[in-house]
Image (cartoon, rainbow, N blue to C red):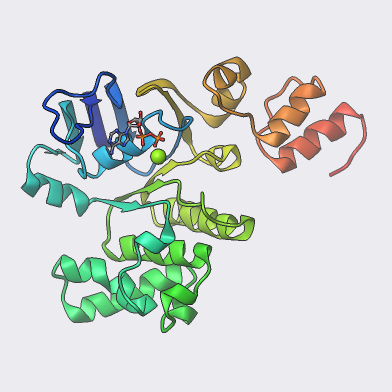
Length: 283
Ligand code: ADP
Ligand code: MG
């Protein structure tokens, strides 16, 4: 039996602008129902303004829903106290690496989260070293974060969450500001965290080639969940993707245009599919 970690039930969310009593005309999220299970790697797709970041912030109780409930491991995000308890279970990594580094030395930055949780110093030392090794940044533990690349900074931010030993990590477009190498480093770290450390991952992304690496893909538009399925089912539904202004991964598009029937998600399976399409052996 799969165990539920996050349960989002009939959730709507509206932003209030200054001085306004009423919610804005169109809510950022409308009647969302979603369960996230322990150990899953879920990608969230949707064009700008579809509600992805709002959903992410509800998952770790930065926001409380306007209506409906968000429950994490049995704790409902309806009070400040419960919010604190939820943030011990669900960590968050944001888009801009410069906005989440708080210390002037890498290892101090990673220690910041567990220090705030009141973890004892010897245990913090152990967690910081271990988390820095997990993200391949141990050799840079004495560096000043502002001298690091964007990908390295994001991995330090991820180490900070690992050191807090949260069960789940929500990453809101963590690779959007990175170069291709930084993106690959961060994606490898995310996958290792999920597969080897068993951390539940919710990855908000606009890169299709990242979404195909998840176990499950959620598509959002106008504050609603439009689709929730495996990557291969999501990316074979080209009509649905185009209707919600999303693109198709390049290998998928290429095979599609060649008239290859099977849904291809990555470069390797694209090579295999084209090879058998041509009747040769390119592998
Ligand atoms: P996404 O992350 O998918 O781009 P968001 O969750 O940021 O979407 O936004 C969903 C909707 O809420 C959009 O219409 C956006 O304009 C609105 N919104 C987001 N943040 C705020 C805010 N701080 N104040 C008012 N409206 C907001
Ligand atoms: Mg966003």
